[in-house]
Image (cartoon, rainbow, N blue to C red):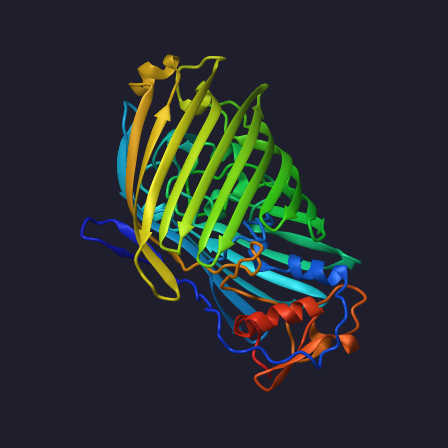
Length: 505
């Protein structure tokens, strides 16, 4: 899946096997005149929406149903196996007295295995990053970024490398009552119910190799060593809570930093339409931050709210995330705002941008101790051109420019109030797979619904009667569905749904 090799300059490059993009087949659907025509129940429609893979973000987070997916998949017996990744070979340059430059590789690879288990679905996930080897020193240059520690000092103006094991988790999901489902999630390395989908998984951030400088206000807990999350959800909402280890990982990025599950968080999701995902969340992180010198560790209270918009048509898309985060530590509260966007045309030309404003303390920025907080901001934008036309993955070349802006009080520290930066990068990612019905009146490249040869093996809402399951014949075989709506979606692109179906035994 993920391979590294050495370039003449000695830089380690990350690469990964990616995506099987299923093209829409031109097969004419079989006549459905002989099918029983009855209205599908609301529960069946909800189950169809809830089971869509497009909604899944990082951990148990949600993204809009219209979000495209980037993956390669296959079946192995009862298991459906998928893999996802994103990798860059980049050169970063940040100017000013705190600027630096570095060549390295930002990267991650995730694999998931999913199968039916009893009345529900079991999913096992593993996510790794080779950044402990491909990002040198205490992280790559990222002016005004802050968070975690290295060499006994607070990391500032750099983004730390991610841990080797970013996720090792399992999730079980099953019907609870009419129109409701329950979910249990957790593992030794996982993400609690706190914040929006983590930036490595947000489509709005996907083409951008640079981490947000507001990361530690919005989604810094996406790598937590010890998480248990429970939730209840329906078609448009989810309520969930977590107990987890809220302590930041140490600077040894290759091990596990286990601790007591004494931090707590809660989150509410609401998806008013296929194009929008909203969340609010809050958490108390026990001993999250290391103290200075002999000081004890500090607790942190966090609150976040975010809105994500996604619209997909054929191989083009627009995704935007706006988020707010608040950290309260030792009686000092700071706030951060982020807006980022990604516009992609024909899965080839991508424009991306990000604007952030944050309050940061002297401790965050590593300046002379003061009670004052500083309002800093960063503007960044870029373009990537993808060259490969293969069905599995895309390779592209990109450029980005940024401007880190500080108040007058920090001019002596940073050298100027506006400090420009730039990046050039080679990028490797999967080919886009667009969900069906992402926007009214638009056709798309992927249709995927649950189907079975035996109606008794369908996973449908409580009250579903297999004897009355809608069915159709395609290519000489009979297929059964939870609702007539699922059957009709299947007939718009049978090949895609069948590619996700285990082989008949």
